[in-house]
Image (tube, rainbow, N blue to C red; front, side, top):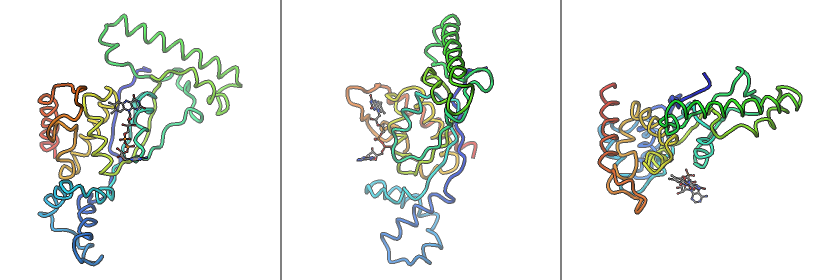
Length: 250
Ligand SMILES: Cc1cc2nc3c(=O)[nH]c(=O)nc-3n(C[C@H](O)[C@H](O)[C@H](O)COP(=O)(O)OP(=O)(O)OC[C@H]3O[C@@H](n4cnc5c(N)ncnc54)[C@H](O)[C@@H]3O)c2cc1C
């Protein structure tokens, strides 16, 4: 079935991320040697130390730990948004090297709002995708058959809905920023869904680093002004449920 849904996996991350950040910060505030640092920071001090750094706004130590995600089942529209985050690193499935017609159809995302209109609307959308697929195949053929040279131009008739896959790496400082703007109800639904899934993944392995991560309302008031969703309690409850769920499954 060509219809896909977002799938997010935490592929790898810095070993002992909280320790790595605490060690880097400790160097700034003590006369510790590198050998002292290698012994690590007392586990019981780490969380307090990290939250002090956040309060002070001393955030550069949070750049020493990073997390790499595998993301699939997302649209090219998602790609356009997520790659605006300049402090992240990306490797994205190529539309030149990979034939979008390899399995006889191209994968695409259906916006939930379209599905919510009912079966008839969804069917109409699928027919539109099938039409674009036929255009893609036509251009591929006219341009010499499936190969890098034809794929690179045939793809121009594919929609924003076309599926893409990527690996993406962000350091903790960037992740905190990403969660603030993209877990917020103001963010578009697809990138918001991925952001919440990423948050769930990191909470499973490094909850102490992401205690306050999420949209601004989970840390206090809403920062969106007139554009507020006016549902801070709902968002806070969602964030709390996620923290509880990941703590339970630890
Ligand atoms: C609700 C919403 C609506 C949006 N609508 C639009 C839209 O209509 N049109 C549009 O074009 N974009 C839109 N965007 C994208 C937005 O403008 C940003 O490009 C995107 O959110 C990336 O954020 P950023 O630049 O803060 O973060 P990143 O690129 O992830 O950078 C993180 C932080 O690093 C610092 N930084 C990075 N690069 C620089 C730099 N060159 N100079 C100074 N500081 C830097 C900044 O403090 C920045 O916040 C929207 C985003 C959201 C969340």
